[in-house]
Image 1 (spheres, rainbow, N blue to C red):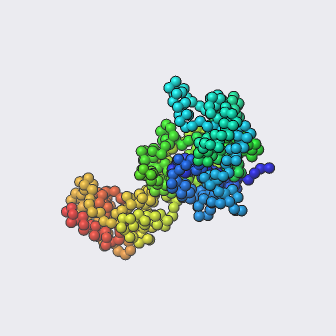
Image 2: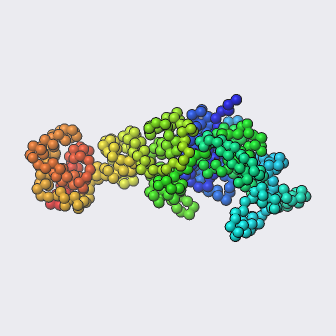
Image 3: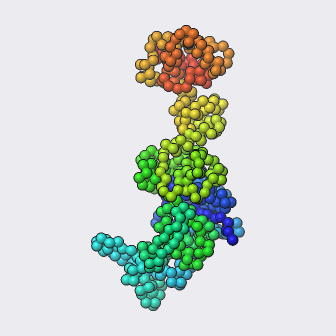
Length: 518
Ligand code: GLU
C-alpha cells in the first residue's frame, strides 16, 4: 500500500538559515504539495553546545516570508507545536522535547547487539587521537580499534554494570559491521555502495546530557513521524550507510523513507561551497533575512536588500533544478506543478548574483504600480517626504522599467520629490553655455504659457514642434532644462518631468538655476 507523502525539513537551530537550507525547505515544500502530502517542520536541537538563541524563530520567519510554511510541526501562528494532540499526533516537533523517547531505542539497539556502551573518557580519546596523529595516522573508533578500548564489548559484564550505574559520561555507539557492502539508492544520485569497513562507530546517545545524537534522533523521528521521503543536503550523504543500517537494526526497512541528497550551492566562480561569509564579501546576501550574530556581526538578508520573496523563491528553485525547457519565471503554484526530483541536478549549482538581480527586476515589473507605490512611500517617509499617493503611483509607473529594486526608485526619481540643491559640475561645464540657456529660458517661457492642463503627449509634441521649428539644438536645450529640473543632464524626458512637477514648481526651478548660475 502506498503511504501518504510526508516529507520534513529538519534544521538544527545553530544559526541563521543559509539560502541552501531555504532551498532544501523549498524542495520539500514543492514535493509535498505536488503529491498532496504533508510538509513537516522538525527542529533538531539535540546539540546543546551549538544551540543558538533566535535561530528557530529565524527559520520560521524565513519560511513564512518565502510563503513555504510547513503544514505540520507549527501551528497557524507559526509557533512550534509543543504537545501531542489528536490534531498533532506526531508532536512535539522539537527534539529536545522528545528526550524521553530516544533512550529506549538506544537500549534496544544495545540489546539486539547493534550498539554497545562506550566508557572511554573524552581525555582518553583525545590522547589516542594525538598519539596517532604524531605517527601520521588518524584515529577512528571502529571495528578494529574498539577491540582495545573501554566498552561493553571488551569489559566484563559486572564492570559494565558498575560503570553504567556509577559514571555518567558514557555513550552508546553503533556497532558498525566489518567489511559489509551497504547498497543504497538515492533518488537523485542513483545506486550507491559503500563498504562498512570505511565507516566509524558513531555515537548514538550521550548519557552526560541524556540526549541522542543527530543520527539516532533523526532516524527514530523520521520513523515515528512516518516520513516517506528524506530530501536534504548532500553533506548528509556520508551518513546514509549508517542510516540504512539503523533502519535495518530496528527492523524498519519496510517503511524506510526514500532518500534524495541535494547538491551544494557553489560560489559564483564555482570554486567551493557558498559560505556565509561570501555574501557580504562579494556583495550579495546568502541569507533570507538579516541576522545579527552574538558577536555583533551582521549578515545581510535578501528581504532587507529589497528582494521580493517570489523572486528569491524562483531563483532558489532553479539553483539545482530545471523544468526541462527554457521557462525561467515560475509562480510558487507553477513550481509545484512542474517540480520533480528527477530534474534535480547531481552537480553543484553555481550561484550567479547578477541572475538573482535579474529575477528581482522581472518580479518588480510584475508588481502593480499601486503596490510598488506603497513600498516606495515607506522609503519616502524615511526621507521625510510626504507625497500624494496618486502622484507616487504616477512616478512609479514611469520609472519601474528602469529599476531592479524598489530602493532604486529614489535614485532614479528623487528630483520628482525635491528640488536639486546643486548642479553637477561636469554637466554644467558641458551644457550651461549662454547660447544654450538663453534658448532654454525661451522654451521655459513657452512651457509656462502652455494653455490648459499639462498633458505629456501634447506637451511633448508642442515642444518638439517649437524647438525644431526654430531650428534650435534640441539636445543642448533639453539638457539645460534638465539641469534646472534635475541638477544634472540625466533623468526622465522633460515633458514627463514637467507634467509631474506642475508649472509652479517648474518655474521655481528655472528661477533657481538662473539665480545660481547666471
Ligand atoms: N538537522 C540536520 C541539518 O540541520 C538535518 C539533516 C536531515 O535532514 O536529515 O541539516
